[in-house]
Image (cartoon, rainbow, N blue to C red; front, side, top):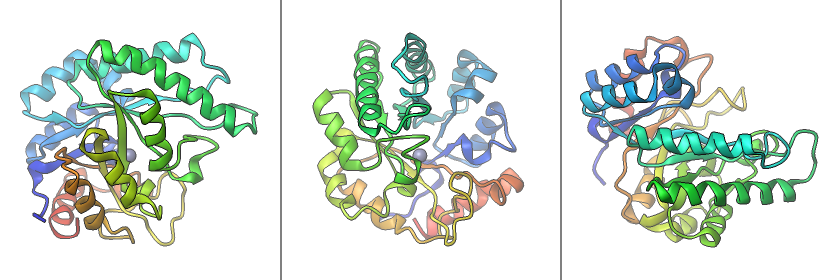
Length: 275
Ligand code: ZN
């Protein structure tokens, strides 16, 4: 398997969000020879989607995904407000030419213990958003999150669960496989094979630190933790996945405190040596 070269990398802007606004991240990606970028919606809206699209195009970057739609359970019911926001997310993804709109689907409804109904609400929200996304030719990628987030971020927690939803909903929907969320799953390789090229829409990289000191904001740089990243990349590429390797590191106490150009250099070095 060939080492990852910079042009095969995409920067998920969460990685440098403490240091760079979106226009700076676009410039940073171009300066370091990255092939792509994956913006978050708050930063995209701050810059303006049209302006961002122009800057990304001029920098010659691909967009490996837009983070994120979803949060279908946030208001306790599938409200028009939630559906409209997802529609806007689809439109923003189209504007910037994203490969897919990544979905963090939402956890339990506020005050609820009913995981089953949360999951039903999520599937209905995905179906409705997909109906719209198909009309504008945007792909929807469900990102299954590690089960520690089932309560507050995403009640879709395994590749199997995400792919079962995809099978029920049909074309135009797939998965964003993030090594942080899937590495522990004894079924991960079988489910990557089941997904195949058609449903593998994004591949996110970081590492699982031991110990992990914060559930959300203590992700590791590739090589600093215990995930067999090269093994998982081999598995997705064996299915024909040819998208960019998107680096997404939430790191309050470490990488968010560093010079972002140093962060970019370390990403390139690790991508070439441990991924
Ligand atoms: Zn991710």
